[in-house]
Length: 216
Length: 245
Ligand SMILES: Nc1ncnc2c1ncn2[C@@H]1O[C@H](COP(=O)(O)OP(=O)(O)OP(=O)(O)O)[C@@H](O)[C@H]1O
Ligand SMILES: [Mg+2]
Image (cartoon, rainbow over all chains, first blue to last red; front, side, top):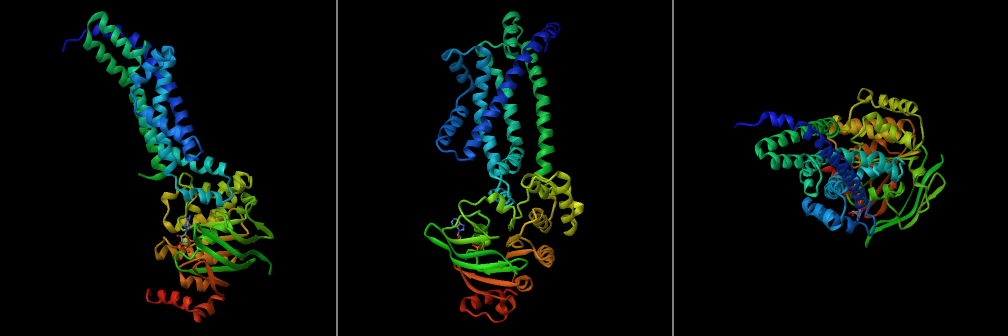
C-alpha cells in the first residue's frame, strides 16, 4: 500500500495536541466514574435504606444505554458544553461499571472477616477502613483495570459533540485531503500509544497486588 | 478464686427456633471451661452472645462485674475478650505481623514498635517468628490458626473463647494447635473451649459443660463426665465417638 508518509508525519503535532484532549477527558471521566462507582457500591454494601433502588436503577441505565446516546442527550438535549459533556457522559457510563466492580470486590470479602475484626475490638468504621475496603479494592483491581481500558477506548465517540479529540483530527484530515488510509493509520497508532502504557500498568498492578495477597 | 464471667438463664431464639434455652454457668479466673455437644445445639451461638456478635433475648451475661447487653460499649468489652473461630479469618491483605498488631495499634492506641514487640514475643511462643512477613496464604492451616490465636492474645484479653478451632484441620495440624492451647492453659489464661475432640476436652478442661438442644445437660469435671456420664443423652452422645475410633 502506498501511503503519503510526509503528510502523515506532518499531522503528528495535530494528533499530539488532540491526544491531550482525549487523555484529559479520559482521566477526568474515569476518576469521576471511580468516585461515583465507589460511593454507589458503598451505599449498596451498607444497605442504606431508600438508596438501594435508585442506585441499582442507575447502574442498569448507565450500562445499558450507549455512550453516543448519553452524549446526545447531554449536549443537544440538556445543552451542556462539549467538553464538560464528554467528561460527564463518560463518568455517567463508567460510574455504573465501576459500581459493579467495587460491589463485586466488597462482596468478595467474607462476612467472617468482619466478625473477626469486630471481635478484636475494632469499630465498624475501622473494620471497613482497615479490613473490608483494602481487600475489596485488591480483588477489584482486574475489573477496575478492564473498566479503565474500556472507558479510555469509549472516548473515541466524544467527537460527535464537537470535541477536538484524536478521532476528530482524523476526520478533519480525511475531509481535507481525502487520504482516508493515512489518517486512520495515524489514529490507530495514536490509540496504541495511549493504551499500551495503561494496559501494561494494569497488568503489573494485577500481578503485584492481587497475586501477592490472594495468589492466583 | 474470682469469677470473671457469669451467664444466667441465657435465652436466645432465631425466629421460632429456641437456640439457647436458659443457659447457666460461670467461669473463674485462670480456669478452662470446655463445652461439648452435638452439632446445632447452640455452642457457637453461646460464644457469640458473650462478645456481642449475637444479641440475646433474656437472662444476663456478667463479664468482670459488668452486665452486658444493648447499652454495652462492645468496642471496649471485646478488646478484653479474645475470640478465635474455626475458619481462622486472618486478614488476607496483611502480613502475619500486621495481622497481629492491627488491633493493638487501632484499638489500644499502642505505638507500632510496642505492638510489634508484643507480636514478636507471641510469634516466638508459637514458633512462627520466621513467618512474620508472610501473607496468610503462604501459611498452612495449622500455622494460620496459631497466628489467629496470637492475634487475639496480642490484645492481652482477660478471657479467650475458642470455637472449634481445629475442626477444619487435619490431625497433624490440629495437634500443633491443641498443643498451643495446652501451653496457653498452663499460663493460667481463662478460656472457654468449644471442641469436638473428646480426648482434648478430657485433657484441657477444669470444668466441662455438655449441651444438648440449647440447654446445659451436664456439668462437672471432665474426668468424671467421660468416666461416668449421668444422663442418657450424654451417654448417647459419647457412644457416637466410640465407634469412630
Ligand atoms: N443466624 C442464624 N439464623 C438462624 N438460625 C441460626 C443462626 N445461627 C445459628 N442458627 C441455628 O441455631 C442453632 C444453633 O447453632 P450453633 O451454630 O450455635 O450450633 P453449634 O452447636 O455451634 O453447632 P456446630 O457444632 O455445628 O458448630 C442451629 O440450629 C442453627 O441452625
Ligand atoms: Mg458451632
